[in-house]
Length: 193
Image 1 (cartoon, one colour):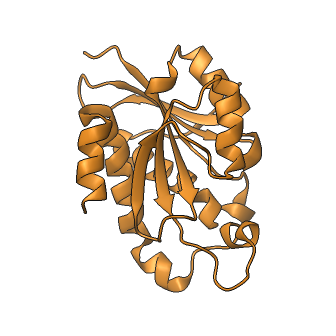
Image 2 (image 1 turned 90 degrees about the vertical axis):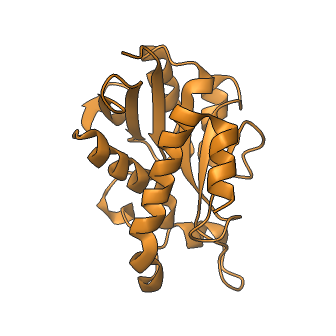
């Protein structure tokens, strides 16, 4: 039985009005992971919805979390959960939307800049480091002169929604692979596909 604990935080905005937005793809990936773990999200005092479970029989302990704050304030719940469950930053995985990656692509990294993503900036501040793992789920760049903020707060298009389940499934696979295989092997597998 593994005693390692991993905190997986899927970023998004709270409430049904944002549920289908590109900005909420982190929440969508967490829903896929929740179905694999077989749990239901419950409120936690950290201002997040969480599920505790294991990845497979005897596998690592997982805390799946959807911060209940708006995206830009994701740091407080993630920081509190990391402290509450004694999870070091190298065992924190943040799943988020990324406009600099085309839709249906996923990129993984540890540390580095936040690329103007205010949710990541807030998490880095709360954890006191940028050295946590990120699953960057591509949502593509806005068309024409549309502002990035307007783009990410729009729902996925009809065409995108047709292939979205597969995109979310691959992102959930990437999270599981990060935990079991590590960053480099997962990057080779995910970035090469």
